Length: 239
Image (tube, rainbow, N blue to C red):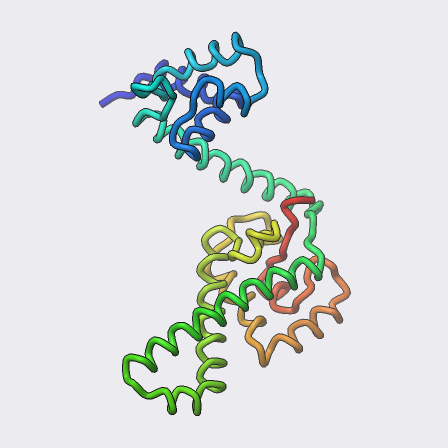
């Protein structure tokens, strides 16, 4: 079935205004909001808000109490907005990479992100082992073998966790919290194989050597040797 391009253009035109996107995102985050709630949130006058609410008629509906909420079309529109925001971020990163003006993340921020991620995986490892010990009712064995077992499982989970999340969108939980992102230095989209290679250097026995050889490179783009080997670096999204 042929798509009505005029209708597509009208939808894109409605979503092109930042204030309308703010309304939809606010309703998505809060479920519903009154006219007064929206006025206080957007800091606009009554006439301006009324105008934009009329433009958003296909995407919002009113409850019996008179509050606004997203319609089905509005929920789809929010997903589109999130997708476009992601594309815009990638396009911006790729543009910066191609112009060799990447906002490189500092060693301190990368270390904070690493500590957050390591702490998370360590906690998950302890929970897994504790549950398994309770299931087999063998607490003594768990305590006896805990150090080597915890270390082995933590290293494996950490590599898998970092590879999957960084390969997907360049951000582990720690990097997202600190505002960092892994990117390829050639400006192309981050991939799982590049993430897998760079994260080998984070394995605890290799990490000191990874940092040492990275320091000897004398290039701020590559604080770790495995970043240079993988052709990746870490940027600061809040620069």
